[in-house]
Amino acid sequence: PGMKGFVVSKMESHCSPCVPRPYDAAATGAGGAMRDVVAMGGRPVFLLDFIGTRPLEQEVIVGPCGFSGRCDCGKCKVMTSQERLNIMIKGLRDMCAVMDVFIVGGGFSTSFSDIVPAVVVAVFGKLVTEKPLTKPAKKAGDKIIIIGVTGNDGNDTLYRAGLAKEMRPAIALFKEEKTALEAAMVAFGTGKIKACSDLGAAGIGAAVCESARYGDLGAIVDLSKVPVSIKGITPQEILICE
Image 1 (cartoon, helix red, strand yellow):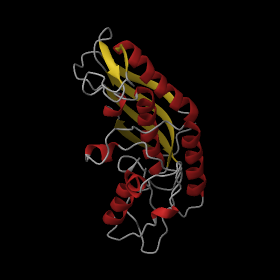
Image 2 (tube, helix red, strand yellow):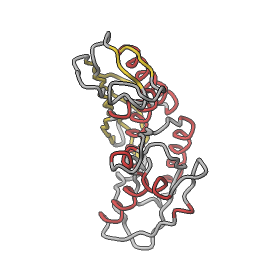
Image 3 (cartoon, one colour):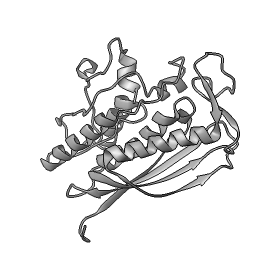
């Protein structure tokens, strides 16, 4: 309400993960763009989306073997492009509903011939900090605070590097996303947060390395202190998973 304040925005695509897990991938794609807005010091308010897919009557394979076009694992489902589209739309809507974000428009195309559908979102938020936050660390001696827990899902980077046999896209954690959002808002209210980053692709490893590098500093991270959601998770998964 009113004309005062500043707007921050972020655009993000989440395409490949929609092949094995269309619901979670679409939801976490929206959630990832929302977290990027939060990382800039904003509260997400509006979302625009675009979805591109195969003609709606064509069959697609949803599951671990979706990229090959033939199921060899027995875990996949065969459905129409329309059915997969409905699943992706529901993922987007459910994440927006939990995060109190309004979908105000979007685009759609059935002209895509590739196995991988396109899911692109743009999120706009109202700045709640005095000025936008940036990723680079600001001062030696500052502490790194992690909000949320990590698991072995969201392993896209490990999979592409050949360090995981199966891609496990990030699972949509709606309650946790909302809790992390509100926790960040409270933290911003203290005025003591000087830099912020979303733990997206490549997780803690990318976020900490980029923050330290761009700030011309170093960082020490004890992985044993990172909150995790499952037992038996490896150090590589803690460091790299989304």
